[in-house]
Image (cartoon, rainbow, N blue to C red; front, top):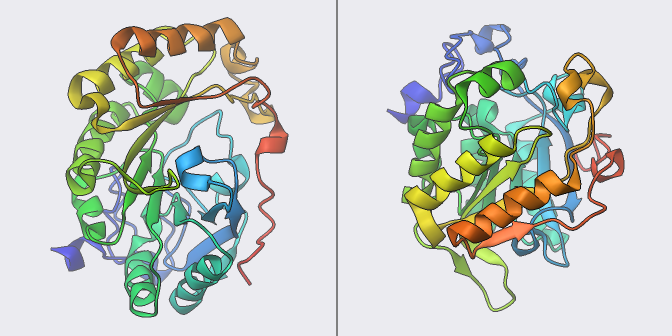
Length: 303
């Protein structure tokens, strides 16, 4: 089954199921061919505290994306135009180098469309001494059967839950079916992770953290997201409510999003989490908005 899924000749890795023959040079919906492309591999300090800690998370930012979020905060790499080609062997080395630098974990940022090579690179890294947890950092638009190829390799799941509304998902991410796939993907992640496990330093060793970025004017949908998560998973998962939305130049075609998130809208969403009874919740203080919180995708740590 895994061989059928991890097939670069007829790519069906993500819900787009574009069928591109990436091994023959075709480019998938993700904007990528068969070879791994990455734009940064470095210690990253801007994740949730139980991921970054003081030492940082060993984040590898992969090029391309299966979503088309009009407000994308990592627009530079999501379009697939930034990054360098990385061999499977070099990716294994990168994982081990990040561990040697003191990373708390290996953080795979938007790696799903490269799993044909990422899966064996992870296995090889484990054989060569990788002992820190592996984080799968994703927009949430995933197929459960693809995620099952990562069982035993990923320890911490860090998906987005962007919308409950198919209309919003279609308008802002060009994926009206996002909610149904995100639901199924999250169920698979929770199945694999089980109950959260944190070490004596408060660093997560195993578990699920669901991120939700509050968008301007979308408070009602944000509440629906929180209600869904609470009703289905309670405190079996952590939830991270993000207020760091930054209107970048490419969002001008969507006037309703071409503004900062009003603080009162963010507070309303946070207050709703408290109302529901959520206790495993991360929230952001003021000052988390701005392009300075977006890393430089300068291929650091890749070559």
